Image 1 (cartoon, helix red, strand yellow):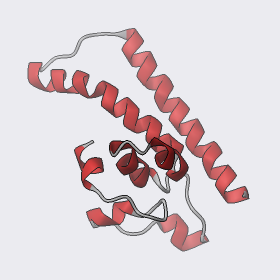
Image 2 (tube, rainbow, N blue to C red):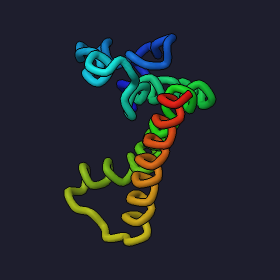
Image 3 (spheres, rainbow, N blue to C red):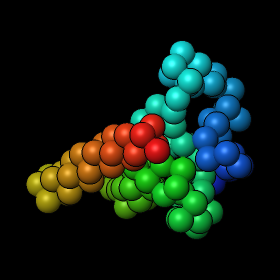
Image 4 (cartoon, helix red, strand yellow):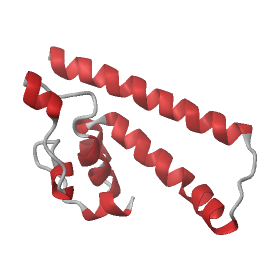
Length: 116
């Protein structure tokens, strides 16, 4: 979450990850089209700045995953401090459901961008 807030979102809607010293998208280099996760880092950076509309345009799954990370951060911090976790089926199911939803949204968004 902190790294996302620190990064400057790429104006093109993807490529923000390059600021971390990571290479360009292999998928883009090989096939000349965006991959399902293109724009994910940009989306996180935009969400951290409160620009949810631009974040959704960059990659709507990134917006969902940022919100999930933000909502679960206190839980993971608690685990880190206390050294144990509490069992919550509702928490686990909610996290898994949001993760599955984000995956589905990423694929649907990617198909729409490739087709359009």
